Image (cartoon, rainbow, N blue to C red; front, top):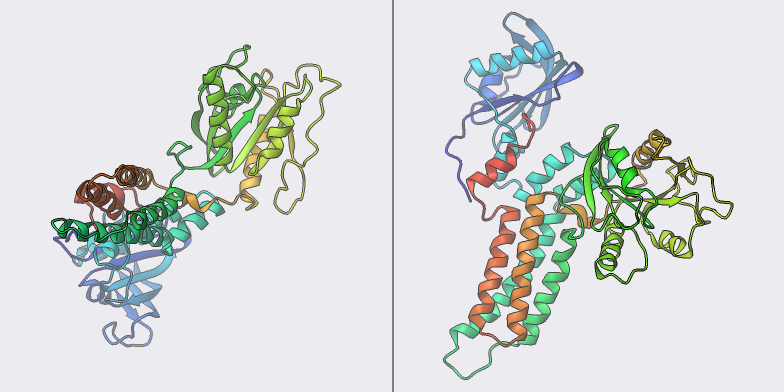
Length: 464
């Protein structure tokens, strides 16, 4: 565990910038209570030193050049606080000028301005939370919708840490068996069952694989896969939603052979748009591979935009693909600038039930005329805001750092599996398993460098 050199008292405004009904200034450290005592006087007449832990104390904060201000002070004593240090929160009117004056007063009495994420970093360094939970604090604060909020809350409650610990336990059991065999390698006794180790490694992989989404780019946001047959206008629709020419378009079918991704914000929600290759029967291996990849992306998406050309008859293959989509889906009837085919008819299955409205949604668009795009954005936004999107628990490992660690740990476990099946030495198998164990410890913070910690906590808000 990394030890912090300085445990001086830190202070920060812990509420968002701007005017509000209430503002909070937070202190943490050895001198937090004594500094607060010079500013705040409880209505009860008791000193803060005499006040009980976990109490809310109405009173008055006396600020130079401002005067007495009504406030409530919340007191959390070490080691039961969030940081395991003495913590004081002063709640008062959310005037930026007032909060700034209080902050200046506390720093003049010996507190230091907190760095980004320093309160949570102290909680981690003191052992209050592990690193996975610390990162989930930032994820919870920046959650764009209810599903991301639930995913972050699950990680904060220990969901990710428990999964990592379960995998680590399987690896440690395997290592214990291997090291016993190494210790007694000079004796003609079989101390281990390779079948038993194989089962433990299979269990470790089973528990670890859901923690990453290997088919998806390592970007955040509600995942929206734009899918359908070739040449129905998927890439043109993608470009209009993004607001620039990001994907290659052509009147010839099969232009998109790989998946193009881009983040876009609609309202207050961040979306990750995925322009998928068209689904069609083909003799070309590259097109068959692209179609298979498209189905993987759709399978892991939160929303599917199924695009169809309204100037042509909807094929049985298109209907089959539409009905196979298990996530929430919007049927996009594209190319309405062209004469509609008399044989065109949308799929009979309702695209989705949008929250409490219980309506099936079909959006009509024309990429040539840029028609229907506002309606499509509105449909996406309402689907998320209605709470209809249920992100899978595989999204619990939300950060790119965690995904990379999981991916590398999986590679090491698979290498150990291959060595085991090929009858290689216990030393070689153990080497790969130690590597996997070491990597997983970087998620919980048991093994992590100061530079990684600085990079993680620098992304936090000031005051968190």
